[in-house]
Length: 189
Image 1 (cartoon, rainbow, N blue to C red):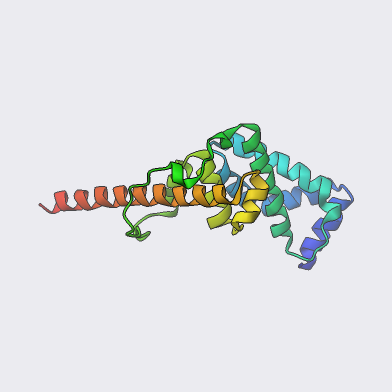
Image 2 (cartoon, rainbow, N blue to C red; image 1 turned 60 degrees about the horizontal axis):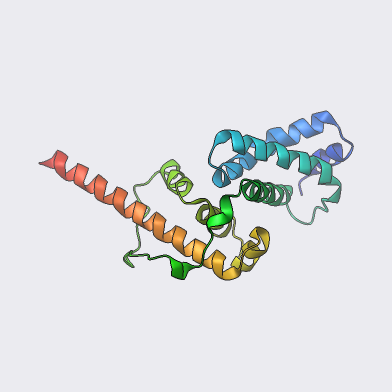
């Protein structure tokens, strides 16, 4: 942990408002981006961020410094987002993969030509359960057994939701690629 972070942590442990504001100023944007990956609208993301920072301020005394502060904060933000999702009852539609008829080809969709905002938009369009598992596994780096524990689902359900999310994203990428290719051909004619 860098010295500046240690000063921030110590100030927050002493409930110094300037240290708390500085912590928010330094990490708020990154943590807000994480919130936006889990909830569909900006207002909910702001609520999650606010709840997460309250937890961070209340629990900073437990921060040991054996990992970077940002990773510790990120885990609180992710857990707060998951709690918000559970409270909103978004995860009711989680089923095992065999219940889905996934008629997608095995061809992998290429990501070249897509902007990051466009890809994040595709992820946001996923059903809530798929979106949450995809974020946790592909973006945050959790393993399926960890996701199962976090979300209160089986490991198989986590794997199936991830598989379904990948399939839906691949289908969307293929559709967008075809649309772009047809637009290019029409302009060349």
